[in-house]
Length: 300
Image (cartoon, rainbow, N blue to C red; front, side, top):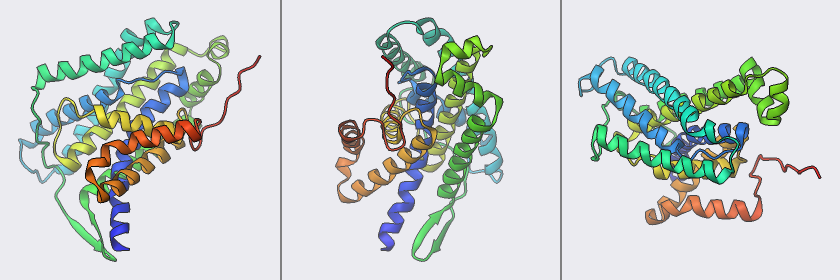
C-alpha cells in the first residue's frame, strides 16, 4: 500500500507539469481552434530563461536565498515566454488565420524547429545542470516520503491552474476570451478586440509553459534544447484526454497522464514513452471529445 501511495505522489508531481503545459494547448485551441505544436518548445525556452537568471543570481551554487531567486527566475521566464508567445502569434500565426488549418499546423512545426535550433546556437546542444535553488528536505508521513521539490512543484502548479480558472471565469479578459471562443465574428461585432484577446491567450499559455519549464529544472536539475519535444506531445495528449478546449479537463488530463506514466514505469520503464500514445489512441477510439469535453453539433 505504501508503494502505491508513493507512486501516487510521484505521479502527481509529473502530472502537474503536464497539466501546466496542456493548459496552453487547450487555451489556444479553445479560442481559435488551432493546435500550437510549438508550445512544447516555448516550455523549453522558459526553462533556459530561468536557468540564465538563476545562474546569474546564484552564481552556480546553492544559495541561502534560493526561494527568492526561484521566484525571480520564474517571473523572468514567465515574462520572457509571454513576449515570445505574443511574437509567435503576431508573426507566424496571425497572417495565416484565415488559411486552412493544415497551413497553421505546418507553420507551428516550423516554429518548433526554429526554436530548437536557435537554442542550440545560443546555449549549445549539450544538457545543462540547473542550479540547486531549493534545499533538499524529506519528510515521512505514514510511510510516504515527501520532498521539498515535490511540495514546490505541486503548490506552484495548483496556484497557477486555479489562477487561470479564476481569470477565465471571473475577469473581463476571461469573458472576452470566452466570447471569442464561442463566436469570433459576433465578438468582433460587439466591440471585442479579437486580435488583442488572441494575443493575450498566447501570452498566458506561454507564461504557464515557462512555469512548467522552471519546475522541471528545479525538480530534475537538467535542461537541454530538445526537452520540450516529448513533454509537449504528452501534454497535448493530456489536453485531448481531458477534452481539448476545456481548462479543468486539461488539469485532469495532465494528472491522469502523470499517474499512468509513473504506474507503467514501475512495471517496465521501457514502456513509459508509449503510454501517452496508447492513451491518445484509446481516447480517439472511445471518447473523442475527452473526459470533460462536450460534443459540438454543426448546424445544417
